[in-house]
Length: 399
Image (cartoon, rainbow, N blue to C red):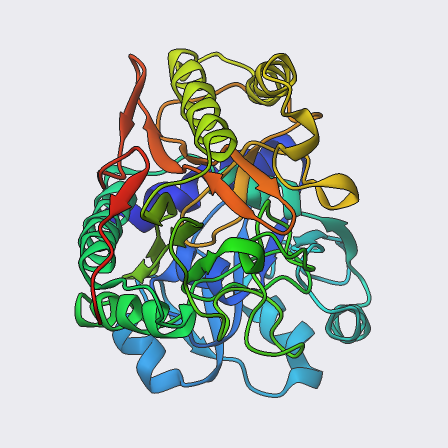
């Protein structure tokens, strides 16, 4: 209960600064963040006072789960009257409220319906406000991310012990998914970005790992079909090629992100060197993971190191498919703020959780790199992902 009260208080403080009278929380993850329940409806947060969770379905379950008061939403056409009954001082014939909502994720059709039933309101974009609210994690949230990190450590160790030449990528990711599920992985990882989806991760080998795709990351994977063009495929894993194990899971609503590089046998020297550069970038970035560091600078410093190593053409993808970031925030979604990219002037703040993923892509040959998830502390950082680092060389064994 105290966790939710703190979140609501921080939201209301920002609403006061921006002169927002009501915030309509519409997206599942944001609703869960405020209420502790993920039932269908809207959370209406006033600038001052107690919010209300207006539930369409399931009211009975929302009553059991929600940490804030719950009411039946009733008729959508009567939403203005319903809101007015709870906040008469803010929503009356004499008052034009400013209402914020999440423009970044709310479908246009649904937004227009809200405008139609709440015509007196002045609507504004609350996306940045809410994303910034969720950037800083509480000890409660960090504890759940740690649970996911423990699961990722175990899954990686199991993958190292299980992988064999001749098995399909699909077989390896299926084994990892089983390990995750048995540790409480809910089966999905959520993304906020439009038309972006993610599965358990990107486990791919050789040329399949370097195959470009729509996914906004340095490595996408071939996938099983053009209908899901990312991640593991039916490609057979061979010796002496990089195997990228970029995995994550979601436990109790919170996700982790971790990448390690495997090889059955030995990598070519240039690929091995590229991996060493990725670790060098990570170590240099770690030196700057302190409160006050500007997020943008971590990306530009990484670009400089990659260029000095003669690998800038391969850094975070290849050619026109290179992505323009070094890392990203993580929490209930895989693509939270802050982003380590140009234009992000936010300072690192204690409580931020960030995944940092320097990788190098070589078309036709594979992807090498590493990714860790970090908690920013008042003195520096804590590495949350604990799986062994380095190129993990696996001896060739018969299946």
